[in-house]
Amino acid sequence: MNPYRNASQAYAQDSVLTAAPEKLVVMLYDGLARFLARGAAAVRAEDAAAAGQALNRAGAILDELLATLDPAAGEITGNLAEIYMFCKRELLAAQLRRDPERIERVAKLLAELRESWAAIAAAPPEAAIGRPTLGAAGARA
Image 1 (cartoon, rainbow, N blue to C red):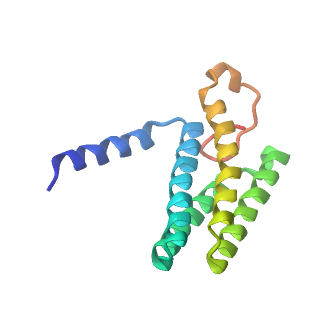
Image 2: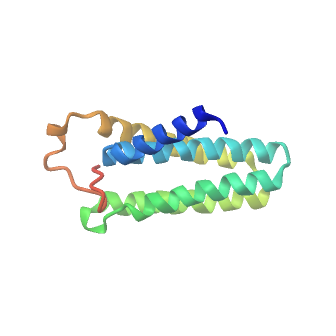
């Protein structure tokens, strides 16, 4: 048993449990980027099992992002939902057609959204006043 691995896992768990909602969304996007990169690499290596696993994990993160959206928050949540659903369809098509470029286009689109969320997460708390919430966790956009 590696004591450093246990400490690392505890730190990661603590980071998630204590993070602000906006930071959690950024963390989801970071995980999404990792799985998309793994998926594209696996498709290029013709490793269907690894590609499927990575793209399934990416799809699960997109599902989680969809679940955080609050329809009562306005038009932005509908737009984000459409983007997430588009990405899920594109990833399915990329997996079926073994198209790593399609995965990379999705990754690029989501990277732009991640940067927007990172800016929101970095904003001082006073800047959040009056901003709509995106879900029960209180993520703001």
